[in-house]
Length: 226
Ligand SMILES: *Cc1c(COP(=O)(O)O)cnc(C)c1O
Image 1: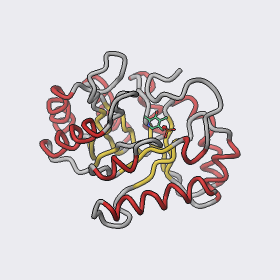
Image 2: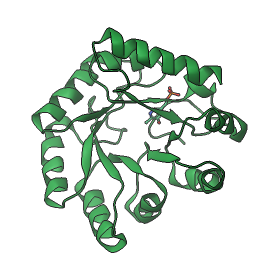
Image 3: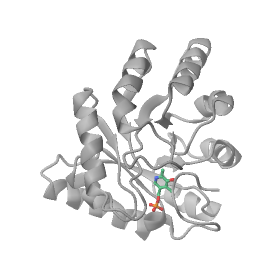
Image 4: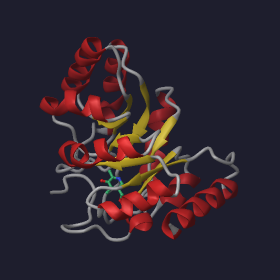
């Protein structure tokens, strides 16, 4: 799959340019609303880490792929309603969108019942956009502290910069909030800006259309989609 190989090569080049260790940036291949044949091609080429933004859509396609391909890791990168938390925790290896105390408490309670918990990221609404999910930058520290009190495995922070803004100040803000709170992982950067995100310290980039091609239907904006 040339899309995948090309993106992996560009990630390695961006790591090297930023003086980062080779392989220090992980790739989440964002497979939402992609035809199954394209996802299958990326699986067949050996990639195993994928991102989906809707619990129900992921539930529809991944159990089947998981039976056929070993070692799949799924990241939830879209907003999570508390009433879908259990399903999400059963399906996903990582939930990147913890953004409010109520959700953190629900995940903690379910983790107690289930005896395990996916890796977690706190999503920060770096642009303070009213329609976008994510905790406000000023409130991130308190939410991270609450997650720690609940003994949740928070690995890092995630952000989706405003659609039409220069993303770099947003990447920097996310990095600062992570550093202030002692978190090592940064999920930031998409098809149009992952190299800039790597230069700013991303440890995980979420790339969809540049790997798979344009999505099947609907608009292309992340978060709040459909
Ligand atoms: C869809 C989506 C992406 C991938 O966007 P592309 O522009 O296709 O790379 C990344 N992150 C989130 C949260 C998304 O919803």
